Image (cartoon, rainbow, N blue to C red; front, top):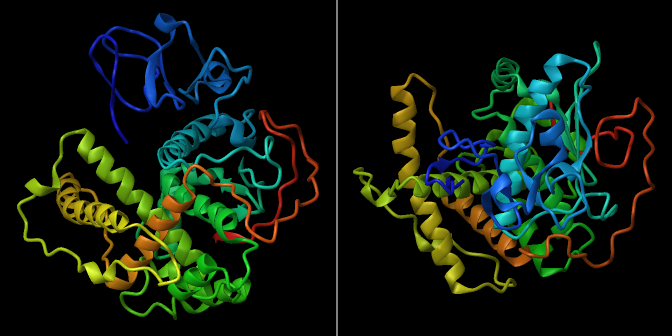
Length: 391
C-alpha cells in the first residue's frame, strides 16, 4: 500500500477522506490509482456508501452513472443497520475489503460483480448471526460470506486462539476467500490433462479429494498431514484448496507489505542482519508450463525483500509490546508454491474471468427470502458454504 500526496503537499493515506492540513475533501479513484480532491477537480463524486454512511472513501468519475464505486458494487448483502454495532463493524469490513481490491487492481485482477456477470462475477455477503445460529466465513460459487462478528477484535482473537491459528484478521479473511474465488476462475472446468491443472495438482495435491471429509479430519484430529516445512500454515494442510488459499493470501501479504515499506523509504538492503538468499533451484515450475525467466528474478526479489524486512518489523512491534507480527517460516516446498501462485497471477492478469474449457454453466438465479438489505446488488438467499469454512 502506497501513501499519496494532496495538492497542498500534505501526505494522504489510503483511507483518508479529508486532508488534515488544507481541509480538502479527498477520495481514492481506483481507475487512475490516485487520491483526488473532490471540490477542486469537479470531475469526481463520492461513492453513495460514503455519502450515506461514511464507510467508503472511494470516488467515481462524473462520467459514470453508477451510484456505487467498483468495490461497493460487489456488495450483495450488508449488515442490518438498525443495529448500531453493525455500522461500525461494516466500516471496518469495508476498510479491509478496499485494501484487497486495491491490490487486485494493481495485479490487473479486478473482479466484476455478479450484477455484471452472474456466472463469473464476485459478490460479498456481510451478516451477523441470529441468536442461536452460526455464520461461517467462506466462499461458494463467487459469493464470499463474512461473519460480521469478525470485525470485533476481541471476538476475532478468541477464535484465533480457539483454532490454534498464528494469524487471523479481516484482511486475512478477504485474501484467503478471494483466493477460492480465483481458483474457480483459473481452474474450474479444466480437463485433467490441461497443463495448468496438472501443474496445480503436482504442486498442491489433488483437489478432487473429498473436501468435507478432509476438513472434518482437520478439525477433529488436527493437521495430521502437515509434515514439517510442507505448508505455510497448519490449516493449509487440510486440503489442496486450502493450501492454495493460504499460499495466495501470503503472497498478497508479501506484496502489500513490501510495497508499504518501500513507500515509506524502508530498504531491506539496509537491514543489518545476516541473510542467506533462497536457492534459485527452489524457484521452479512443472516443465509443462511456459514462463518467462524474468518471472523468477522478479519473484526472488520480492521474496528476499520480505524475508529481510519481516524480522525487522517483528522486532519493532515486539518493542511496542505486541505479539510477533509475521511468525511464519519458509521452506523450499513453500517457496515453490509461492512461485506457482505468482506465475498464475501474472498469467491471468488483466483477464481474471477468462473461461476455462469446457465452459462453466450458470447456476440458477437465487432469490432473497428475508428482509430487503441496503445494498446496490441483486437480492439473494444465503447459500451454504463450500470452501474456506471457518468455525
